[in-house]
Length: 244
Image (cartoon, rainbow, N blue to C red; front, side, top):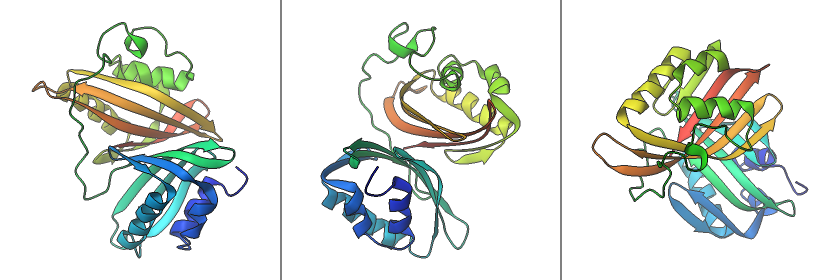
């Protein structure tokens, strides 16, 4: 990325409050998908950045992990509230042509998009079948077994015993992560996570995915999610999972 890295741009924007930095990185025709909406044009994205600066005025901003196509960032308020956000970007000639922003604000209700699913829950199709997850790492293969195969025991082989987990509305250790997934399996008797993108850099692995599900009342929805993993060797020591 020639003009400015994603991490540098976000720091310049949210620490130095330099909105012009966005124009150095984003194409004029750039698009953004966030909370179920598709936003067209750099001007509209700039307006979102200005709204962020107003909403999080006085909050501490930090970049937890970043590469050319992904960033995990966090805001911390003076009274201890936090807001986490993942940026997934698509580059064109070194500049951002599109981005995908996954965030769950501390005061916002999770977004739910109700509609007919498109075959994701039909056994044996695409990534739903019992076979390997094609084109993804062994880490993603294991998560596929946990999330889609409900093989909760795989957690013990994949995560460090002292691993820290932050997820939707909850955080803690390995037992908390296991309890959270068991609660999801109970709440959504039919569900499937479709893996979309994976990035690996330094000791970090990032995954972008879509979660199609049917709850115990028969309601169908699909939500976007993003997971950032920190590894020591082949073990996950920290996970942050965001769901819109």
